[in-house]
Image (cartoon, rainbow, N blue to C red; front, top):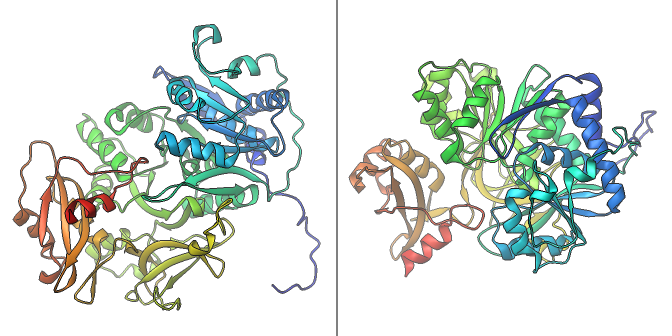
Length: 544
């Protein structure tokens, strides 16, 4: 690192997460935060009132001895109190630990112990999880969050406090201190199909810069309305709560919901005028179906629906666009990238000459790296950086101010990092225009007869069949070609499918030799404890 003439700027002024809320409350005090309670009712507050509540929370944290260096776990849905903890806990120098509700009990206990969490805030509806966890961990106390009176709540937890009781009668002003921006404000644990969860510690600086990156890339401002649909207990709902507050936008918090009861969330999305939301295709698909059932189609032409987790089907993107005018924007990232690192919104001007079909195909790419994120495609055999030519396939590696450079207290860091970059484990290409396209996971890539077959592209093509609900493609051993593709398919309810049906939807996009040797119809896909598709189990079942 070179050092030149020193600046006269306030370079030692720390970037702090809580300053986002302080600014929003001062500049946009009346901007609404609409939130759904556990009983399904919707309530309203604003930035000014939220900062007052967060100030009361800070006083309560002081009273409990929670402050500099304390790890605080949170078990909650996308509720208002969760948002308050997002800013109150880091604001007193403590660190907020996201407790992923999808983790198996043993993994959840490991996360609490490995992070050395000392307090856990838990929503009333999640008390059974907390009580199951209690005898496996050592914490100083629990704080129960509920709209009920504390006298109405029964629990076997010991040393229990109640959130609303703690905040009652506390001052609505707090003397916020500046915090070293390298301090971890949040912690998340990433999981895979093997190994124990790995701790990613997000600094104030990283989250602040990530917030600016998301605001800039999505052009979020105070005229927008943001709904964080992705769970706030998982990678901070992709940083959307912080981006909304940082931009001074209206916020809509959907509370507890599932894909099966998404209708009330979809109605709020329409009624509140949501313009920015995030979620997986498994969430946006039922939203699209709900909109199709309405007597009057809403105008969502200002809406940007950021879709992650897996590549959104073209039928979903085109369906929402044609019906409502909403854009489905593909995004890419991980726990290790805070998480948004790549975004595919508007195509670059020089690509306007592409055909209609080519433009829609490009929309399925992961997109362009956000300002500050560096991407390289690396040859897995010799570690060589590959050219951005759209054909050279290698592992995606990233670095930047909000990309982690290590896992917390883990001995095998070297296997996941190289030359200051995080090794994603994803395989892809970058086009000459700078668009990242994932083709597979390192462990999922299929090499048949010396040629690569993208399981991701094949899965998404299969999903374009109207009678298919889910699809997974794996490589299975083959004595002649090394590996051959096999497709596992879950039909929609009441539908019957054959291999010929699947081949029909694939034949125009894949060469004959690339088509799956077999199509296995199953009722349900196997998943890991956090809901990820478990291809390892599919391979094991096939080989057995």
